Image (cartoon, rainbow, N blue to C red; front, side, top):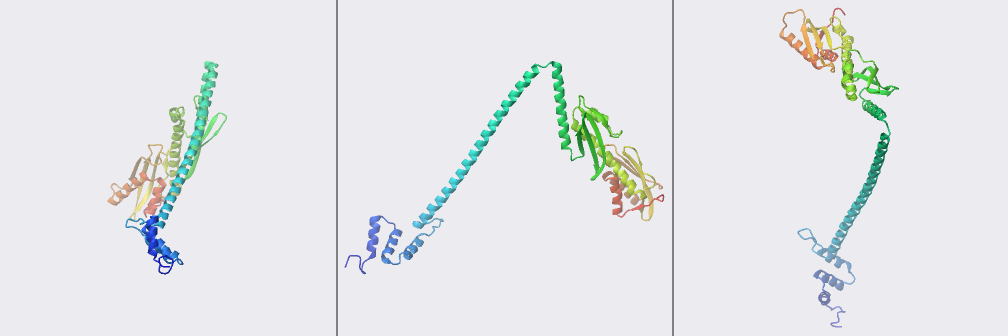
Length: 350
């Protein structure tokens, strides 16, 4: 029928205008509704094309509008809300755990304070009932126990530095192991009696090491310093002795005569032959170690024999040897001579 809107001659725009005016639809929604009326058998494609044309970006990166854009914005906001909620829940859980930990620590602190106060009260009551002489005896015994624990802690801390020890019926026996350049050398001991004042019962320290002087300075006031200083003296002595022994054993063929040394090994003198340009000349070296806690000499003198004056090349050689003896261990100096190609003259006596 004409004008009914149901036949082939019906005009869809009438319904579109009517829906837009009566329902308050946007232009996009009205066009969507129009597509639905025009091709009822193919609803999806026109509607989707209209939606895609509406969901385009603005120059600033946001959607112009439309149902899909609105849904995407809602989904984005929902995800952000979920993330904020999860972050808030984690923060609340961490805060709750910290509050619980603080509460436990506070209870533990209060408990320790109460126990300390009770212990102080018991000690105060017990000391009021003890005679003065007994109080002095108890305090001295406590001081010795503290010193005993201190020595034990020191030995545990120094077990990797050459110091070790064991408990004895009298007190402690301390062992000092010496080394030089990674080589284990001699071992010494000091037997201490734990009483007031501390005293040395027995030891194996060489007589030329100032043990009594170190004990008078540090044994009663700073036992850690006492052990460290004693170990320093013994390691330096063993190091000097090791160098002299190596020189005597490894380079005896190049020495013109025996190596002269004293018991402390802080004064060494020897003569060795050096060849330069086919000429052999004996050098006399004198090494003095004024500092007994070091393994390098403080004063070195190298002289020559058989000539009144030396040429420039010989003088340079002598000066370089003096510098080497001051900066390197004795056996390393002779090793460096051979590596540099210097010729050490063989002693005729060997």
